[in-house]
Amino acid sequence: MYVTHNNRRRFLFAAGSTIGAAAAFAAGTAQAEDKTPAGAKRFDVPEDPTKEQGRPVAADGGYGSRSQFETEVRVRHPTPNENTSWSLTPLAALVGNVTPSGLHFERHHGGIPTIDPARHGLVLHGMVDAPKRFTMDDIKRMPSITRKHFIECSGNGLTEWKKPTLKTVQQTHGLLSTSEWTGVLFSTFAREVGLKPGSAWVLAEGADAAVMTRSIPMEKMLKDAMIAYGQNGEAIRPEQGYPIRLLLPGYEGNTHIKWLRRMEVSDKPFMTREETSKYSDLMADGRARLFTLDMDAKSVITFPSGDMRLPGPGSYTISGFAWSGRGRVQSVDVSCDSGRTWYPARLDSTPEPMCTVRFSFPWRWDGSPVVLQSRCTDETGYIQPTLAELIAIRGDHGPSASIYHLNAIQSWGVSQNGGVSNVHA
Image (tube, rainbow, N blue to C red; front, side, top):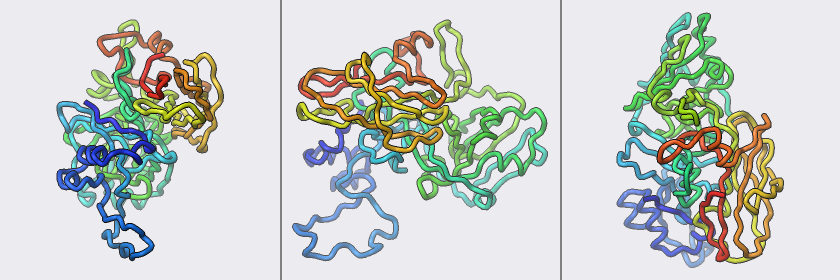
């Protein structure tokens, strides 16, 4: 069962027991006992902070913590095995367009390895002129770039194909996060080793217990693939692939191999487990489509969204995220009548390639039941489809229909009492 989280407004007025429950879920027993949220330290609150000295500079040991009054955390999906599982970003609580590193979603197949960067290296071999092992020092001496990109798991919303099953936007869309990444382009490595004629694919391999592997087209690798070691101004976190990961702007999250240790160049794909029996799309005619790597245009309203409650009729600002794995977001439209009428939303952040944008739309609710939707159009002209349009192409297979690449329009129903729920419309 999921642990649900209310929006930030409601947390300000929540009972202490609610805050304690969130903290207990995310922190260890020690933090749960004093009801301190994960990532924070508990301090006494003075009656008047102007009447006494605050804490000394660097009293935290030199690395800060968040306020004890901020409670949002990632929530783990309740899989039977905690090492082969995922956690979800609390999208409705995010401020701005960059996900804090500590709230970036996770997807692991064999747990989080502990890797000493002094002993870690990256081997590049196969159809190359001069195979080479790069140490972390070698990698950090190479020319670097810094870019903002989203990563989305292709299983985001995998339970929602046939009927609404999850309550909150964290649960339905939380396998999405955006960070500022720093690293070295693969093309720089390619010049170091030289590519042989006919080189068409690269196998990327991780150093986790699952030894995760994926085949990546060489065209993509040379275009914008990055071997990343930085995230949001510091080293990438262990759960994000420390000390290095592969970053493939716009591609499904499973291909962004974490704890990267080896890349093998070949003239054909390696047809690994993760690109044959898994991460392939079953179509309406029963055939499977392989290497559906790009994440198509998508958007979601984060306020108001599932499990929230509007206090009453009045003026609100609808807000959310839009993104596309094929380039920049061109526009976002919002509907307040189940998609019968669409109005242009405002883009609140500058569209960048393969990066989320914030959007907003002024809305006056008269208190009657409505269905809210958003629709993204990217710079290629692709328009986010309805669920019916998507199923017409993908078919309806098994108890959950399809699994991957659900980019259909999300609907939130607002009832007369202000309650917001996940609906299909």
